[in-house]
Length: 152
Image (cartoon, rainbow, N blue to C red; front, side, top):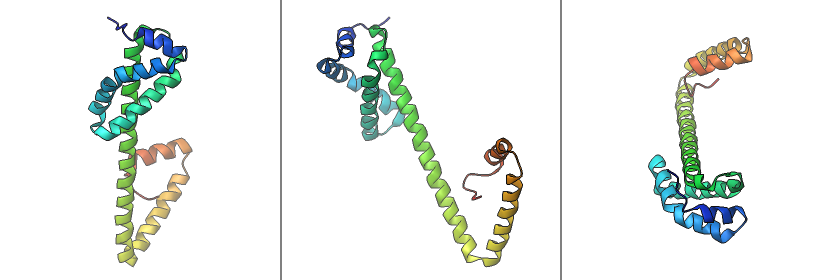
């Protein structure tokens, strides 16, 4: 069953009526924020993502062909924005972990000069072997065999 209560507002907003769009935002903000918060788990970040959701809605409202599908469309945009934020956050954390690992590894290498030399030679050999592979195979090897944070 579709919810048609947003239809007049959607149609007016698609025609460029900013007051109607503001009313759509006011009417649906809490639902979108709740959905985003349930995925992200941070109230303040969820507010930022919710605002981004409504920017996407405004930018793409003319692409919505069936105003009665507005809520389904809005929820999907909110889900996608939440998933994208979580992925980006996981990637940022991964980068931070790699940086910390590299700092720990480089700190150990500086303490032991003979270990640093051996490590450098090993890395050079691995680098040569990887450069001898085709780009696709090299990428697969690095992604599969080399642990995150291993500085090559």
